[in-house]
Every structure is written in structure tokens, then in C-alpha cells.
Image (cartoon, rainbow, N blue to C red):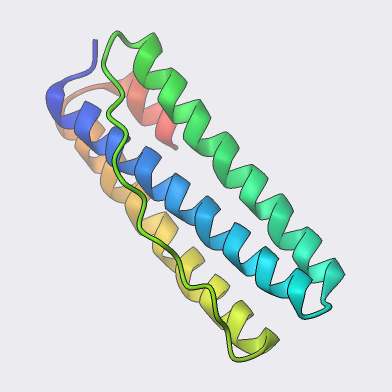
Length: 121
């Protein structure tokens, strides 16, 4: 069973992954609407990847006899100045992701939960 601290961290991560998915899907819709079909497809694939991460974490929480808690997902940006703006925002967002994983890994080590550490990393 997961500790309350790790359960909260993983639930927060599920929410973060869902937000990432929402962001990529919003960007994909913008790219599709502006004629950048290849970019739209690439962003859609990123959406799928983030959704897979969220579902994987959700299932891990269940498998460890803890309760997933689904929170509201913040609405992402829907308007972008141009394609450069989209990719600058992709880069800025993707630079935040490793910090979340490192923080979660530190929590699992503090809780002495090596299985969750391996899962996160």
C-alpha cells in the first residue's frame, strides 16, 4: 500500500499528465486549424503519450491499493501567435516535467518506497 504522501504525489502527477495532454491537444487543434497538419499530428501523438502516462500512474495507484483522486484539469491556452509560439510553449512545458519526476522520486526515497521510486524513474 502506498503512503498518503506518495499517493498524493502520484495523484498530483496524474493531474499534471492530464494537463500536459490537454495542452498538447489544444495545440494540435490550433495547428490543425491553421493548416499545419504535420505539426497537428505530432502534437496529437504527444497527447496520446501523456494520456498513456496518466493512465499508467492511475493504474499503479490502484495496483498498490490506494485511491486515485481525480481533480479538475486547468484549461490550457487555446490561442497562439504562430508556430514558433507553440514550440516555445512546448519547450517551456517540457522543461518543467523532469523537475516533477525528480521531486516525486525524492518523496519515494524519503518514504523508503523503492518500488515507487523505480516506477517513477
